[in-house]
Image 1 (cartoon, rainbow, N blue to C red):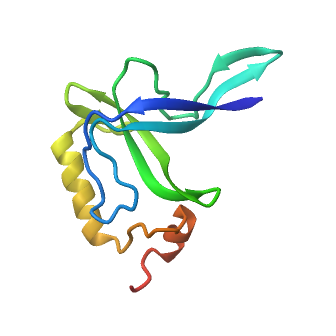
Image 2: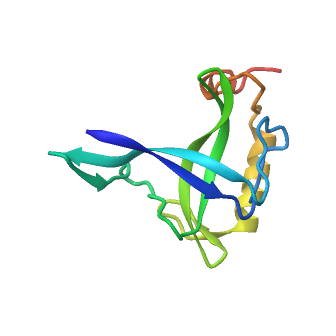
Length: 136
């Protein structure tokens, strides 16, 4: 059986934030992040788990997380999209070479201008994905 995991994290720095984000984050904020799977339980024995190809956050380590506005149980929330290893002021994105914070910020800013999508209050991530590319 797979079980989820709730993490309490402190934001050290915001690498990039959409200028029209509904739910904003600032340095010093405490966030609760849900991950799945967090554990696998077999015959009553619980072991740490993570999705294939993903990063499992551990206490005392530093990470960059990609969050997005979403709706859960009728409330506006931030949902975890992905977790990246943060080391020596670089961000490791999957199997690519490490990128600097400045490179990541610039690429996300560029993407913001090329993709006609931003969060709107009360809109789920699924609804936003469905309208990407539609004229506003």
